[in-house]
Length: 538
Image 1 (tube, helix red, strand yellow):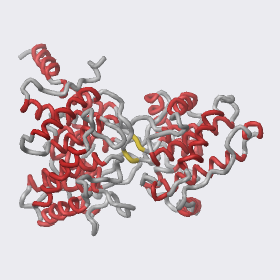
Image 2 (spheres, rainbow, N blue to C red):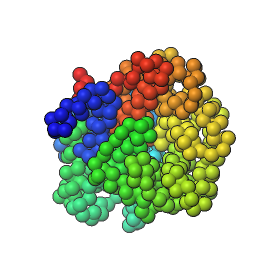
Image 3 (cartoon, rainbow, N blue to C red):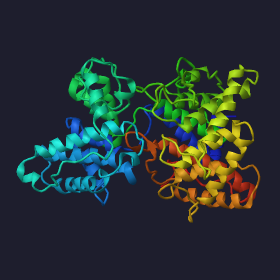
Image 4 (cartoon, helix red, strand yellow):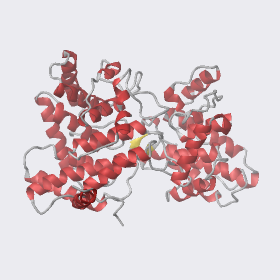
């Protein structure tokens, strides 16, 4: 067959299967954007305004903060998730106001931000705040910085702003922040986890050398290091920041880079849904470190973790490159598996992903060491034991219970052992059915394509055709058809909630494919949800 004929057939196949076309586009992007694709961050962008006004795009970052402010004066998602981004944005605009170059047009946004902080966000009990990473470091640091900036304002400017010192939420103190800063000042080596928060540590820059790309996988941490050390001290880091700024038009994302995290979740999720993926050899090889030592990290600048390691192993297995998941034993604990040693909390999704990795291994090597079989039995019990009374799961790495529930259900449905695992899957499906919204969507605060995709994945584990399930799937499928190409809100845990855009798109795409298959089995006129490649969407 000629090359021309081959291209004609390929074009015809793409036109007939928009999901496959979009999958190819997503996979191609993994190699073209190796640091990953994450939506702009209010917190990180605010930190660049405050600590690195010398970087290109400074005024564009200020404009981003201004247009991102909510009508109530806060920034970010609902509830306590707004505290960290509102502190960062208010401090950033206050810094720009104080330098005198922005004029007085920032007075009103700063006053509204301060009003939101003293009115609703700070007068709260710390126990009600979300468990976002290092909140107990970030909040005291920014409260102190804002109070200091307010105290140093020109009297005429200060008179037009709320002046009472910002308080800390009840139950939150500065003890850990002081201890960390003291340890760093005394010359203690900065742990990789803490490097992610370099911008609030008042650390003296170390000689990281010209090859440093990013400090702690954080643009803010990297910018703070470069401000202290000088751009010439880190040419690779400076180039990385410039690339992020250029791509975002000024604002920056966080975390970044997320190279392995993005590739593992995208390849695992699409493959699991039966969507053919053909990543380049380089993309596949980038996951191979999951098989060595303590596994692999989300991206450069972060420590290795069991979650990214497990999903990378699952992706490799589904791509026909199975490997022994022995690296995961480094994370075994009395309670299950930790995300990293010393984790302050427990993650059900990490344990679900470890079950995926071990389950994949036993499918291919059923005569593997008995330790793997015991681990699968144990993880089946651990996950069912953490299921909520209503049938859902909640996790510390995502704001939505639909994500945690989908992770646990998919792992238990495919690899779980015993009647309790099957019962847990059924209970989860019941919770999903009962929580569907009138428009066919699912979501914690409102219907979203991402959360609806997770909900559909749960329902689609129900093996038989059940009218009520089929109706819910059809309605959810229709919702995805209308909303898949829209903007996705931030739901993933970082310093603030963030959105890994390509991972979310892949999740929605996988649910579209699975829902389309279910719909076509009920109504042969329905083939897919119409998810289009961005190259052809107008």
